Image 1 (cartoon, rainbow, N blue to C red):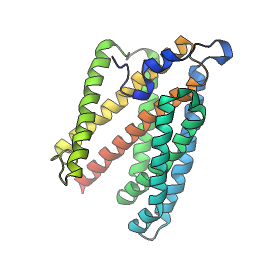
Image 2: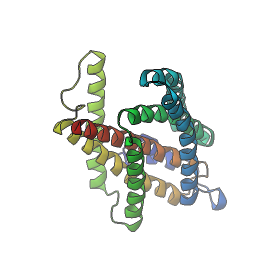
Image 3: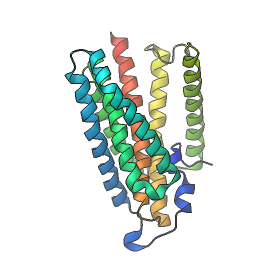
Length: 253
């Protein structure tokens, strides 16, 4: 049974690593520090593509100037993410590369969203950070734990969301779309709220896997791997919160 909806933090990855001891072993503090490094790298490249879009005369010109960086960043993030997932030992190199590529993607998307709804990116980023800190405190206090029932329920929800995304992608390729779920009506907003909740709860499972890696004595390089896996969830959470806020703004208009 998957212990997390984030495939990069499967317990199998930590258990297959050769245990280490002392200063060569993975720690929570080290993982948190490396997570901060990845976030800083992503923010740096995000500011670059954000500037490209905002400095343009109009939205279409901004998109044209940022699109090559967006596509390049997407390709880099996908390749680096896959390499990190399959070869965790390389995470110290590939996870920062992933963060740099992901930043180019997020900067472009965020700038486009901010031009349509000014201030929405700051709101989405603040809510993402608040969610991370709140759930970290809740987990540390022991108020929520990754019990078997919790994992089963969240895994089922993740499966349903994946199927919805897949069906939506296939239908878009055929020139169609699933009614209501992408709109700003009550159903579309309700779906986004559910997805945001599921994405947020995945942080609990990520915390649990990182903690298990520390208890197992995973080697030091797994700190980069744990930080990478946590960032994957945070990127998903941020994008879903941004999507929800955009729907709410469209409904108000």
